[in-house]
Length: 521
Image (cartoon, rainbow, N blue to C red):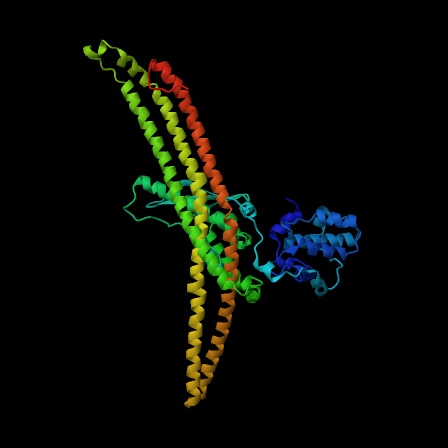
């Protein structure tokens, strides 16, 4: 790792020259801290540097999806300053002056705001991610690690591995629980997937079903993390990065502290207080239509998942039946009883019986192939259906939070305000102490401010709800992924089992000979 990359990983805002911060403030996006590549290119044109030098600067600056991160932008400013001093812009040269970054000559920061591309209202509201881009954000694996048995209890621990951050950390269910809690507090206006239950009722589970429950919970925790890590907003938040990368002893305190520093999204999102200006006039009608459509989609996917589960279960039952079928043939073939005289004269059963024992091997292979088929159906088909169902359910929960939370609180605040106004009118008609009237006036002002904040939060909630609705529709093409996995699992399963059956057919002819009921092509 270069010195610049090391600094970038640990840099604090206070270590950056104020001029850098002022320029960044003037040109970054209105909705987040990134700088559009187009804006950066306009900034480069103001430097009067040669095209060759500008190309060298651009070569050393990383961008993702048409944007520069804040740190990449700072790096670009330092490279511009070095080039303006007549030096060759390079990362290696930059590392020599990393303690005191050089100042580029770009004029007054306030004059640079015109370079910023003015987003349309629709741009801020619309989400540009495709499903492929979302899936590429990260893949998180959640695996069980050997149980740690305490004096009285045994605890389940998970190894969480993020492909994006290339790190593995260890988490207990309680860590997931706190993470979900602070995530919901920070992003209460967005789709936060639910956690699976911590435990089932005691005394109900057998040892087998307990193992199944733990495995089901592991899968659900994996789906939860992947939905969170691939969310276009969550994926860039410090809470998510902390959970996926922090390897210290107390991740729960770390998560709570991180939330305390930032607060909820309404406090940090740059368009939160202007959300009303971005909403279309028919937002409520759009929401109602989309909600009904998504509800129907949710119901259909529930039925698809149920059928897929039954097919996977049947494949596993088929594996058991085939294995038992082979064992029974082996039992018949292992019988060494002497045939009675009335049967021994024919002599056919004795020879046939000796051949049966060897067939258990083929049926064991068939059983194994059927079990693999069931696992593929469960891992590749049912899991993808469950992932999308988890997202659909979290959208349903979000709609209920919007209606029962923000809207309900707004109505209660308006009712309380009305009561205060009536009390004030009564106080002006009937003589009251001056202190009482002043207190009432102060409370009314406070309530007016609270109502104004609630109205802003209500519009921001609608703004986020509109974006989360887009997220659901962005995920809909996962249907093709599910169908592809289903078809592939069936093709592979039938091909593999067909190969074993085809190998078994001529073997029966060799073992038993004569007419044995086999159809010949």
